[in-house]
Length: 467
Image (spheres, rainbow, N blue to C red):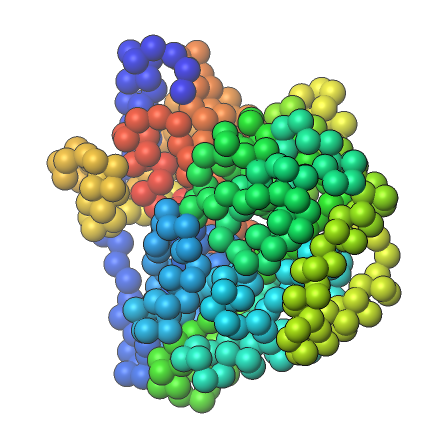
């Protein structure tokens, strides 16, 4: 945040003046004795992208099953996804999600074909694969592991960001260090390309010692990796990052048949909307990276062909498992019938005029906060229990035509670039990130640049759009 401490104090005070103390916020108690609440382990700091699943569960089970998300589970662990699998298997949590990457090291090869290098390299191919019978066949391989596979939903594509590595030259990663999340197939791939790997913890880590980082574009943007590694080969997607929904077998078996069917149908509903959301996330990240001076380069067909040839040893290793080999062959057949996608490029508005991009919808938003939620937020941000306002309470904001309005009528200019938001008035500015869920019409704020008071104001609770 820019400005002197005095200006910051004034801005914080003005923001906190937006509060409107409201009535108690309670939850209705279900009247049906068979109703159950399931805990869902989520390693990310927010669960907005998972909320459609929870909404679908409530809908498909007539409200007899509700989902309670536990966010930031095992945050900061290098092998967070593998640990999360153990947590769900052991019943610490009832449900969870992981990507395909942790399973190989655990001896489960069912999902390896999804992340074979350069195989699923577009959203169109990913959608076609996940609409086939392949996901159900993969999930069935979890039988006997203590887990139930509920579904597989599409995710963003993973690319690499570099500093001065010429990604359009075959063999360009020879002798380089690539930062990755813990994934056996990623390690094998980059080693086959002549690179060594550096493991990142969940939520991101330092990449100063790396020549490149492998992530989805939104993660590169959110972790500010592009400030250190600003070059991207936009036509070189290594693999996708799908979402695999899993359940504890014992907990799932204890549900009624209707509830089990409802969970599976909810997973299908969630998967049906995940593909467009992932594609939109990638497109938005491209726009935001362009606006922040990232360099999008085109590797070209020659480089892609050379890299695919260089990872033959990875395919040879995967093909030792006959099921995986068959899955790869079927995906290749699916891919052969799908045209290559257009290569992403920087939008003109982002590269020439510098005009802000569209943010979340205009309207009035309210965060209704219980006393327990306020106490937890104060504790999380290192503030004493009496530092916040008395709750139950409400935080309110309004957005219209680029003007942010507080409950007391205070006004700021709101500028959007992708998922980044800058609030500015004559006294200073606040920078933060946001995520909007069109289904629930909630906006969540995170990565707030400012003191703990600002963190409490913005991040205690998601803001609901109200009529």
